[in-house]
Image (tube, rainbow, N blue to C red; front, top):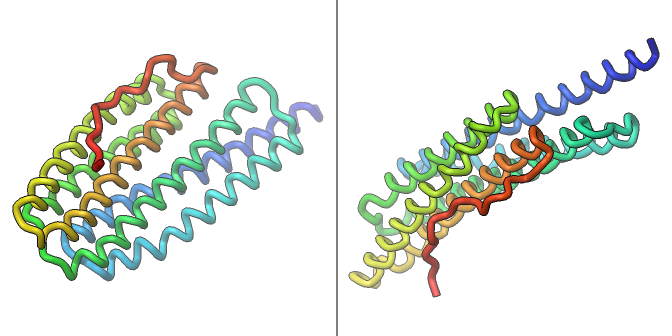
Length: 232
């Protein structure tokens, strides 16, 4: 009976931590959506709200890490249970970084609203951010369902995000070559595109943790990536 009581207490603690992960994931999804919408609509007020809400994401990351550390110290989980705890800690770290990148998008928008607009750039960046947000939604579902196939699908889709980034990179270079007045806004827009691409990388890191959680092994194959263009 005492062992059963300990096991049930551990399960409850672990369920609570995983609930925090899902709440954190929801906040990060909202940050991506709102930051890209603020960019599209040149909405400084919404940008400020995204920046402010990042504090809640950071607080959840701290809480999750504290609770995981306590769980390891007090319950001494073994095998699969320990794997779950370690995966959750890494997933939390990736979500926190995605939240930071969304905040960076919002900060950059506050500068861009006062600059010459670049035709089509805002819509293209929103579509790229939308793809990352959908990947995040699916990988969180994969985590809850312990769905390895869905996690692998997210890994594959990161190539699409890379291709979107490459297309935008080429467009920004063209705009800058055509008119020097476009150089500064295009540099800011490139920063946003790069941050969005990095969000996709962190989503795929979450997918890898889901695969590790279920199988006990990280994916053996090199993560599928399109060749990324970078400024020299």
